[in-house]
Length: 422
Image (cartoon, rainbow, N blue to C red; front, side):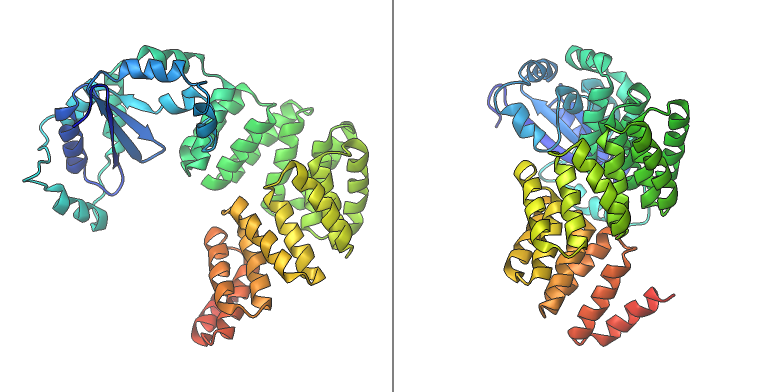
């Protein structure tokens, strides 16, 4: 059915599938597209790409036309920033397809055994290692020239870009590997250090990265990017005192760099420490008066002091430069809710969730708002979402308990309360 030059892409996966079934899929595909290619997407999905023509020249065209108007902009929306990030997912070509699928029974219209064997793998207890054999066979095919050149020239920026793509796709192990490699090459890059920390948190490897950053900061005490991210991770893991010490030292030694001050402001704002936040915001106003971060912490300080109109004004200054800043949208929602403007509060809370659907705090704040507005059913759903994202949130758990009580589901509320008080 393909026209000359047409391309077909078949998705498959390496998880919840038997080795025999995946080999059968590959054999079936290879029987029609012997010059096809297999791509590993993230950590478990694969794409089989075939055409009426060889695939390798198409890779060259893809690389050469990467800057075609509209193409790179569209891909940037899903954090694919360069050709390397995309084409480096190539795992193998015709040799891999032939070797991996050799001896497997193809799927045909009158013998679709996969319809029966696939559910057994999904719901059964046996788990085959299908990704390992594929990775081992990846060395059978030499990389196409276009890919070889990109891989050979890849530096810290390319690894960072691919790491960001993996983070967006929740492929955290791959992201962690890429950011670790990028950090070795560019240990002073703020974007690299932040990406490494984000990947570490997703992998629950915070302590590994804290140790890595401590070592690097000892070797290079002037590495502000490392010191600031170390302070943030220490705060997130309950060591705010150590974090304040590190950030304060950096702020003292680099008084014109706003990053240590921003980290201090974040620590004090999250801790509700108005007295210590105020001089930091004053220093930020001197060092970086027009920066969105400065305006955000001005808004935070005003909100904490009960000056809601000032908080709204400062928050709106942030949105001029960062219209989708989830933290600021959340803060404005809280300010309007406290000021009694319930409709605008709801709009800002919802906008915050739309901007960052993985922010547990936004769910909790909107849920609290809905609970106070007597919308217990909506609140219960939002608190549940918050707990899915952050199971340790006591505020979300207590809110869910109250919402369930308001709905008359006292047995479920009592069950959650017992869990909370263990």
